[in-house]
Image (cartoon, rainbow, N blue to C red; front, side):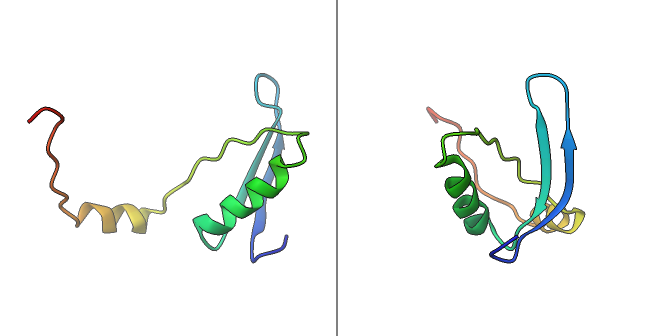
Length: 72
Protein backbone atom coordinates (compact mmCIF):
# COMPACT_ATOMS: atom_id res chain seq x y z
CA UNK A 1 0.00 0.00 0.00
CA UNK A 2 1.28 3.48 -0.75
CA UNK A 3 1.97 6.33 1.68
CA UNK A 4 3.64 4.09 4.25
CA UNK A 5 0.47 2.18 5.16
CA UNK A 6 0.19 -1.58 5.53
CA UNK A 7 -2.79 -3.93 5.64
CA UNK A 8 -2.59 -5.98 8.83
CA UNK A 9 -5.76 -8.06 8.32
CA UNK A 10 -8.59 -8.44 5.82
CA UNK A 11 -11.86 -10.16 6.76
CA UNK A 12 -15.11 -10.84 4.90
CA UNK A 13 -18.24 -10.85 7.06
CA UNK A 14 -21.97 -11.52 7.00
CA UNK A 15 -24.38 -8.76 7.95
CA UNK A 16 -24.52 -4.99 7.58
CA UNK A 17 -20.76 -4.75 6.99
CA UNK A 18 -19.29 -7.02 4.32
CA UNK A 19 -15.60 -6.33 4.78
CA UNK A 20 -13.29 -5.40 7.63
CA UNK A 21 -9.76 -4.17 6.95
CA UNK A 22 -7.26 -3.52 9.72
CA UNK A 23 -4.54 -1.20 8.51
CA UNK A 24 -1.51 0.45 10.03
CA UNK A 25 -1.06 4.04 8.88
CA UNK A 26 1.69 6.49 9.81
CA UNK A 27 -0.84 9.13 10.97
CA UNK A 28 -4.47 10.24 10.81
CA UNK A 29 -3.84 12.57 7.87
CA UNK A 30 -2.65 9.62 5.78
CA UNK A 31 -5.75 7.62 6.74
CA UNK A 32 -7.95 10.56 5.74
CA UNK A 33 -6.21 10.98 2.38
CA UNK A 34 -6.56 7.26 1.65
CA UNK A 35 -10.23 7.10 2.65
CA UNK A 36 -11.08 10.20 0.61
CA UNK A 37 -9.40 8.64 -2.42
CA UNK A 38 -11.24 5.33 -2.01
CA UNK A 39 -14.71 6.80 -1.43
CA UNK A 40 -14.30 9.26 -4.31
CA UNK A 41 -14.89 6.31 -6.65
CA UNK A 42 -18.49 6.15 -5.42
CA UNK A 43 -18.37 2.35 -5.27
CA UNK A 44 -17.87 1.89 -1.52
CA UNK A 45 -18.61 3.53 1.79
CA UNK A 46 -16.03 3.55 4.55
CA UNK A 47 -16.29 3.76 8.32
CA UNK A 48 -13.04 4.20 10.21
CA UNK A 49 -12.34 3.40 13.85
CA UNK A 50 -9.11 4.62 15.40
CA UNK A 51 -7.55 2.03 17.69
CA UNK A 52 -5.26 3.09 20.54
CA UNK A 53 -2.24 1.22 21.83
CA UNK A 54 -1.84 0.53 25.54
CA UNK A 55 1.02 3.04 25.54
CA UNK A 56 -1.24 5.75 24.11
CA UNK A 57 -3.84 5.10 26.81
CA UNK A 58 -1.11 5.23 29.49
CA UNK A 59 -0.01 8.59 28.09
CA UNK A 60 -3.62 9.88 28.07
CA UNK A 61 -4.14 8.87 31.71
CA UNK A 62 -1.22 11.12 32.69
CA UNK A 63 -2.96 14.20 31.23
CA UNK A 64 -5.50 16.19 33.24
CA UNK A 65 -7.77 18.23 31.00
CA UNK A 66 -10.02 20.93 32.44
CA UNK A 67 -13.66 20.26 31.60
CA UNK A 68 -16.60 22.58 32.18
CA UNK A 69 -20.02 21.04 31.49
CA UNK A 70 -22.35 23.00 29.20
CA UNK A 71 -24.39 25.62 31.04
CA UNK A 72 -21.93 26.10 33.90
